[in-house]
Image (tube, rainbow, N blue to C red; front, side, top):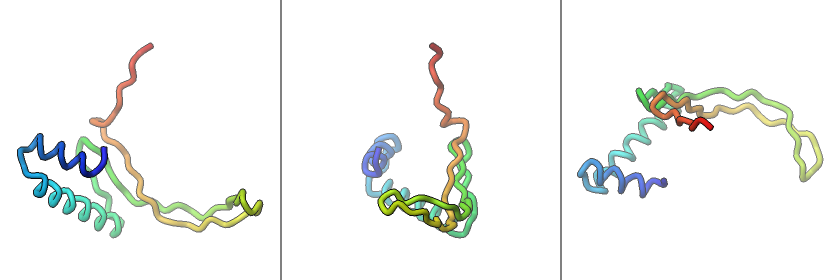
Length: 92
């Protein structure tokens, strides 16, 4: 599902216009992004938690050049799903 499809589905389920849903969705994503830029976790009960984690520098390998290289440290966003997102596996 892409953003357009999500907007259409939420509009159908909520009875809101697609334009209103798009504005709300844009505000939500902007707020989540701003919180993560400030390294504040975002917890949505029943859905999951987004948080920023530091990834340490490490040695890597460039296969096209055939050389070892240093991969610099960086910050990444991690997502831990909540229980509502657990996917039940069928027993065989």
